Amino acid sequence: MNFHRPEEECGVFGIFNHPEASNLTYLGLYALQHRGQESCGIVSSDGVDLHAHKSMGLVADVFGNEEIFKSLPGKAAIGHVRYSTTGSSVIKNVQPIMVDYSRGSIAVAHNGNLVNAQFIRDELEAWGSIFQTTMDTEIIVHLLAASKANSLVERLSEALNRIKGAYSLVILTETRMIAARDPHGFRPLCLGKLGSSYVVASESCALDLIEAELIREIEPGEVVVIDKNGLTSYFPLKKVQPAPCIFEFVYFARPDSYIFGKNVYQVRKELGRELAREHRVEADVVIPVPDSGVPAAMGYAEESGIAFELGLIRNHYVGRTFIEPQQSIRHFGVKIKLNPVRAVLEGKRVVVIDDSIVRGTTSRKIVKMVRNAGAKEVHVLISSPPTSYPCYYGIDTPTRKELISSSHTVDEISRYITADSLGYLSLKGLLNAVGANDTNYCHACFTGDYPIAFPKLKAEPQLDLFEKE
Ligand code: SF4
Image 1 (cartoon, rainbow, N blue to C red):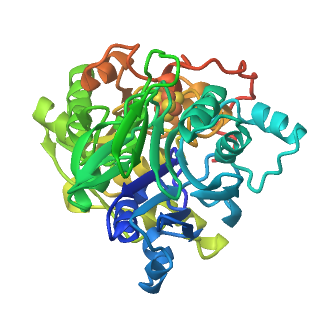
Image 2: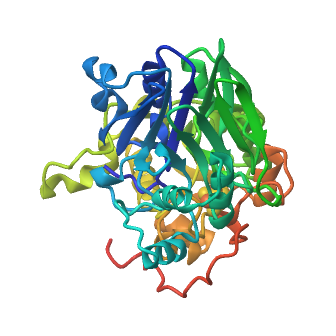
């Protein structure tokens, strides 16, 4: 069931020099499941050959049989969880992508989205390359294979100098693991150690699960090569102003992770405190939209002095693939995932904290649900600025037309979701909470200031809020 939130993108993981490499990669992917639930895969290396297992589905389902790990031998492995951001969601697009070419085998796991993918793909196809998938990630593999340079690092540098956009990559060959992050550093990627093994992961929560120690982030523009001799770092790309994705803090990353040098939970709480400084509301109770709204609601409650309560309970067992049984109960929608606590809400003036509003349909249902549970007033506060622009760097946000704030004022949205009032955190408040100035982060989905130039957005028809009540 899709609740009209921005979809997450992907998560990557890799470990080198560990006797249980594929088992630990499975655990790492398990911790990164929130970054993609459509498909997953692991490729391992036994030092001579690469071995792969990948499929559509959740990590626990795809790797639910111990026998699978016997087919993934070796002391190095990389893995990927995916929500499709480019390429349709089909089995051939499941990552890591693995290919054999004249110099051996290579597997690539990619989090992000390349903005010049079509251009390079057309060029490669004109030269005779045959693509097996519809994913931009495959372009990296073809560029690597086509390069005439001698060493893998040189070939990779050539390839990375051609592509533009967001990429946090983990690459595996028979004898090496490589991690690379684009020069803007859009997506997180961290480096850890477990005894004498090196580990890379999209988020530090994956290191925690396998009890690896977080050493540092892979820097924007850095390529790290890990082999039997240890770790070597390269910076083969032109330096640019880094622009890590600020939305990772707002919504995507897990609160227990450290990304971009900060703990996500603490940043989210600070978003709530900033929200309380900007939007004071006379109310009896503050409730989050679980789970992502919880830390911000706690911060709001602390700063405002209004009691924090759990007024909406989430059913954690509703998967993304839930299919509503029949047309006649279609309107159950959000109720299948969230249920109000009447004892908390009845007769109260309620502040509902959520992290974002995308199309507005979910917020509208939540407001109705809270009111039906007896709330006297429902005030909605959002712990980020209005999401008015699509993301081209690996987050599958709806088109501009579908983003309610791209064509409607806060008052109009407030009326649409039937709230007594609606307030968004300002960009300044967001940057304060993250502890940054506006050049340190990408915030294009709020401002339209895209760090990598992009073809001009076409004027799109506006979303008609009240066309179908
Ligand atoms: S546009 Fe938004 S979601 Fe995309 S990278 Fe920038 S901040 Fe993140």
